[in-house]
Image (tube, rainbow, N blue to C red; front, side, top):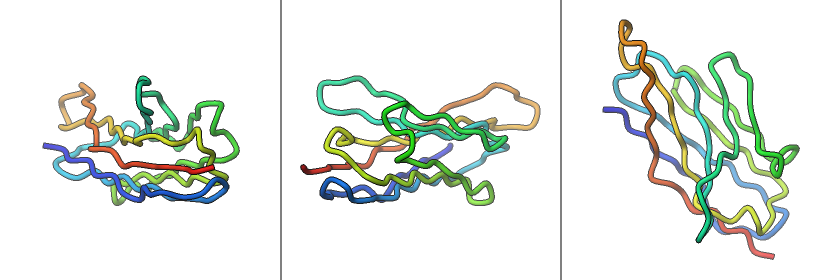
Length: 122
């Protein structure tokens, strides 16, 4: 099966930076897209940033200009560079990987990591 592992979270003061990593492993034919989501206590899990196979990206408005998502296709890894962090960025950040598992199975499957905690103090 596909495994997804996030790392890089931590506790930092407002204005600091963090870089999150998301590594997907297992039998993967191709990666359609990888995305970062976050969930604060008492709130739903929301999309933060997403990178597609053609390199295009998508960001929630609240992080535009501060966060940058990137990918390393050879390593099936995505990164989220977070700059100018704010207390409202505090959440558990989850990586979602959408993949094609087999050459002749064109269904897409999604897998989630366990999450990594990001805490930003004021």
